[in-house]
Image 1 (tube, rainbow over the protein chains, first blue to last red):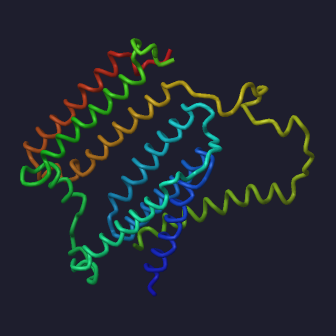
Image 2: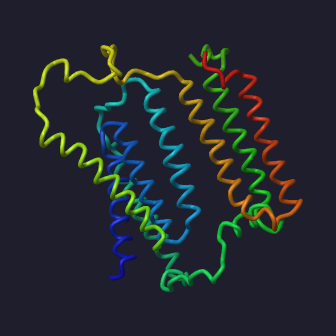
Image 3: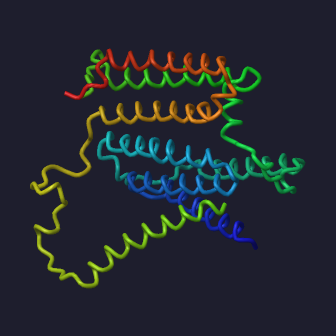
Length: 175
Length: 117
């Protein structure tokens, strides 16, 4: 085994364990902190894949912003934080079967894909991934339309958040 | 991969320093428990209420605004690096992107969502 493989196995195990803790721990704040660990594991996976920019985005956006939002959302709720009810409902077996089927289906579909057996070719010398991403993002042949639609989506999220949290007519002036 | 050894070392160093700070105090510090010491620390004042009381919704609003502009900045970075190749079209596209977001920003501002009275 190469060093990279050992790092991957450790990171994959830590990520899966943290993900499992997110859904099994009783305290919601602890669940949010485990989520941070899982997200960091994904960031390290991006690093192993040489996706440097995605790794930084993962840390800055997911850990830096979205995990904080989760913790705020937990603090906004009442003292349901320590949920005493059962953690599974009576449909748990159906969810488990569905998960196994989904995994099996994905595995079956990916069998025919050459990326399953072949290792990816490394970047050519002088390849600048971030520059390529910037080009693809704004060029008409690339993703310029999704890029502009993303800004509309962001505005919709902003207006929605302000409206829900800050509407005096809802009897909620944000205090 | 090799350039990340520095980050791994930084994480390891942070762990060592944190564990040393706690561990040395645990090893050599005297431990006399009292009711006052067991209180939660609230910057020196007597704690009031519960630690799990509900927070004002404004914190949520600030977090959402932070995420949105965080994502905006994430889009800026690859654009800025490829800026010289993109030329005028790239500039116009980014101005359009910012103007659309500016509408939302002005809405939040007019609503008073950025004020904290």
